[in-house]
Amino acid sequence: MTNAIAVFDTTLRDGTQGEGISLSAEDKFKIAWRLNSLGVHYIEGGNPGSNSKDIEFFQRVKQYQFSAKITAFGSTRRKNSIAEHDTSLNRIIDSGVKAATLVGKSWDFHVTTALQTTLEENLAMIYDSIAYLKQKQIEAMFDAEHFFDGFKNNPEYALAALKKAEAAGADWIVLCDTNGGTLPGEVHEIVTKVRETIGAKIGIHTHNDCELAVANALAAIQAGARQIQGTINGYGERCGNANLCSIIPNLQLKLNYRCISDEQLQELTGVARYVSEIANVNMPVNQPYVGAAAFAHKGGIHVSAILKDPKTYEHIQPELVGNKQRVLVSELAGQSNLLFKAQEMNLELDPTSESAREVINHVKELEHQGYQFEGADASLELLLRSALGETEQIFTLESFKILMEKTPGRGVASEAIVKLNVHGQSVYMAAEGSGPVNALDNALRRALEQHYPDIRDMHLSDYKVRVINEKDATAAKVRVLIESTGFNNKWSTIGVSENVIEASWEALVDSMRYALIGKKRIVSEEPQDAERISMFNY
Image (cartoon, rainbow, N blue to C red):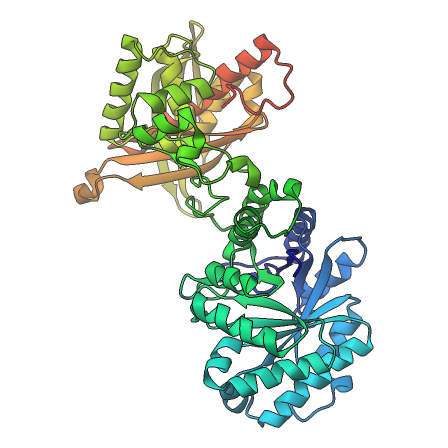
């Protein structure tokens, strides 16, 4: 049996049924373009007649050549009707797709309860619909909805549904664990029996209601299925669909199946993060393979070991899936963590030196106060460089003031006034903003623009506030994390205080210091390396 696996992506259809996920036609096209470059074999775009977004998507993709087959979704014909007259089937045909997926009932309970028709009519609906698509030269896939539940309750009827689809010429018979309640052992046993019954190629479509979608998909492949259906990042209804970002590397790197090329596999992390950005859904940092923390190390013993050989605490090389190793610095950090970070930043930190011990102790004390450097590498780098005497004082604060005014019809207006010393010169600047932090950001930026015009090329892209000790109520200490973007780079800084404005100011200052010092280093060093991605090689 071949070890080639067909990858069927349904992010644009089943994935959009997940809570909080809504994609425009433009979003769907952008994601489809990236999925195509990833090397998936089928991209299910949606139902061509269900809504205007899907109609626009299918019209647009006709104008481009995709190596993946753009696939339409629909259901079997309506009960007691004729396939040739079915509006949904005809819209699939009119969309111009070369492949289509039809969902049909394979659980007798659903036939009599949900469809409210006879078991014989449901089998006719399956046969007629698949046969009609095949007459139109369309590759037809039959998604046997609720197949595993149906098989466990009435195996004869569930298999009869598959046989009808096969007799009609279905190219793929896809077994669906629609409610997500089947266990891996059951999946393997049932798929094995299906292979003994039908000769058509088998696919698997699993849901994650028991946190087993990936495991069930792998079990089906090992039992003989050769198409895997899922979504990027596991998006989907209820608890989600099988996560292709886990299934593909598991199949390819662990089980020696072939899904996509090795070069395409290296795009996996980038595609996962791209889709999460388009969908406006934060990726879990601990998502296997592609998450930011998938290859992150925090404990000092772990870091000491990976410095000797990454295999001590990494099950694969992160680069195989386009990810990278990260070392986190925290109160759990030891000397190895700081040494690793120093090497990453091209800093020479002598592990036997007094300065190394002082930095470690200082970081641990700051973490005790509420700082968290694992999410603020830029602030950590400034701290390390300062300890080694490698930073200069770009500017110093003399004072800042925040004014808040509420007027009828305008709401609350914020104005910030900052007074800085830049290269011995006192700079006084005021600016308004949509809030106190935005006003501070604008005032600080305008004050620095006179001396550093490039500061216009960076901006604050994310702002988060976390209460550290909730029991202190309004007097609680807060942690502010600021993400900034500019100079083809992205970096994060941190501030901590009982006063949210002071914490925000600290993070803002670090953000601009990091940008300006790094920008100066780039100019002075004139790096030739086109791969350099940050001001400090950060």
